Amino acid sequence: MRFATFTKSVAVIAALLAGQASAATVELINNGSFESIDGHTVLTSGHWNIYNNITGWTGIGHGIEVRNNVAGSAFDGKYFVELDTTANSAMQQSVTTTAGQHYTLSFAFENRPGVKTSSEGIEVFWNGVSKGVYNNSTNWKLETLDLVGVAGLSTLKFSARGTSDSYGTSLDKVSLISAVPEPETYGMLLAGLALVGVVARRKASRQA
Image (cartoon, rainbow, N blue to C red; front, side):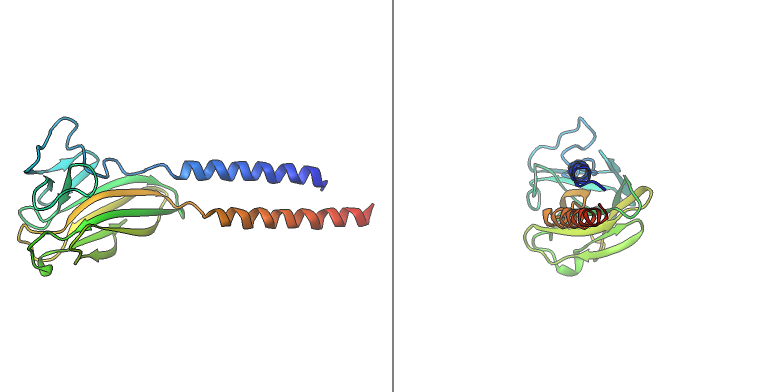
């Protein structure tokens, strides 16, 4: 292999990796901060309501409670949700994923003020598998999880836990993006390719 040709190949690979990294940062979740209820309904400050579904999200059981400056304020934007509505409920959203691809899920949660911890809690499910119950945060806390996709559609679900008494944990700013390798990862890959090129060049020199 000629060294010049190999160098061009490395440059092409680097460009492709950069393009993939850029594409991987696309947000997969629709309406992650719950700022759209149905595209036209508005909740003014100090009001709340329960909806069967909201933009991007399908309610399961007893619907989705959307609040605007009621029992707390949003982590991002104006609205946030609670899933212990009239009773413990859940909501989910399906997104297109690639088998084996890593995705970074982040979400903010906060316990409802003045409510016992035993009544709080929100459980996260990815393709039907529990990824843990999150509870006992007196202020908004941003949690991050590493998830692996399947071919086709993957389903993310949040479900209320604790006593089913209409007082539960608040949820906001749900985000799901492809996990992007650190810059050091690309550096190590390119360094390895360069080393292969050096070895190939030396081998070619000996054969000349």
